[in-house]
Length: 157
Image (cartoon, rainbow, N blue to C red; front, side, top):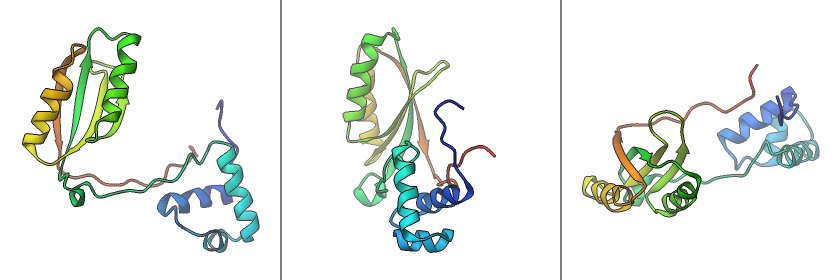
């Protein structure tokens, strides 16, 4: 695969553990994978330099922050032209309700994951921030009842 990095079983173990808890210390990580802490540090540094590890993120509970309703917005942009995409993407990314934004193929151009305070807030967001824009032709809203984290991302076997 172009751009892929060769990973051995120790690298894969390190990645699996760090994806489960990015705060794992190098000492704990090294003990878990059976290498010296200095070797572990070198491997993690190599994985960062190689672009395999992109960073560390803090996960927050939207409900505890007052945003108890989450939804997926399917957005169709017309015309779907490059000069409209940049400003649209930047505007959506700047919205405090936006959690993730995906550019898609198919009938919808974007999928936006949002977290809002309730249905009135969701309605305001859709009407004021999406359908009021000239380039937005259609928005379809799907409420998220529940979500689950999935296993760590590893290369294909």
